[in-house]
Image 1 (spheres, rainbow, N blue to C red):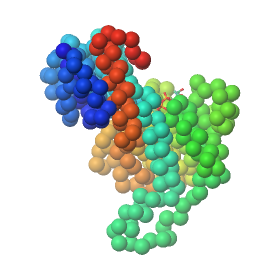
Image 2 (image 1 turned 90 degrees about the vertical axis):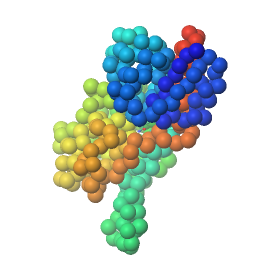
Image 3 (image 1 turned 30 degrees about the vertical axis):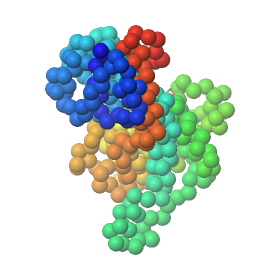
Length: 312
Ligand code: NAD
Ligand code: MLT
């Protein structure tokens, strides 16, 4: 019998294949500390997580039976990949299942930012009928800069075109030919920060993308830019962004992700009038959560049974 521990909230519908397998026992315990995970992990052959569980070297070293870690989502930055490789533990993710959902959240954030929807809602429900403070801007005829044109970045670019936006983008791995087929004008990071009206980031968080947008980029940025981050906290330097907002360089920012999650209660984003936030909800739709859970469940079963599987 294979034992699978699910340590983050993962769709039960998506886990049905694991739950229904005769040779698998699934145990769902969420909210465990590192200490608690170290204590229970020796009993399990597989661990399934979203982004809350930080799968550290200590946990993997304690996981004497652990063969596979399944990430129900894209980013594997919450898993110590070097430790997994050293221990021979396979790490799999579900890269496709939440693409459209996260793209749609990005567009929702961009529109909410352009029209001050969260701020206007807060005032209206507080009993203030304020029609003067929330003059917005149209998306039509604006330039959208996209950093990272992978699965989500491309979907965002396609939909932005439907709003009448001109899309420029930077991705070291996207050919000019493919970009032009997608209607995206290739640009450098410098060109994007100097010319875009809106900028959205869709790269992974790596040593190269960490603080990819920081003081030097804000120093040359087009005045009045609006910035969206539904990718990973840390791609944009949060402290430098606050300064740029206060100096009037950046007109507004919409963030779904933070350098440290959850952010501290006194994090400046949480009280800044030009910043709107959501608590890492990019992938949170019924459809996406079912998709990613189905995807990892299928692969985890294959791996446990030593059958061929899709990604590693
Ligand atoms: P992806 O791998 O398909 O695309 C990432 C793209 O970034 C790739 O095309 C890659 O070439 C590009 N890239 C890498 N380094 C770069 C650099 N230095 N400059 C510019 N581009 C660079 O990934 P995806 O599925 O599109 O996901 C994008 C991001 O969104 C990831 O960080 C992922 O973890 C995050 N994400 C967040 C949520 C959420 O809930 N907010 C949901 C899903 C994904
Ligand atoms: C991801 O990388 O897939 C996202 O951060 C979404 C999630 O963790 O649920």
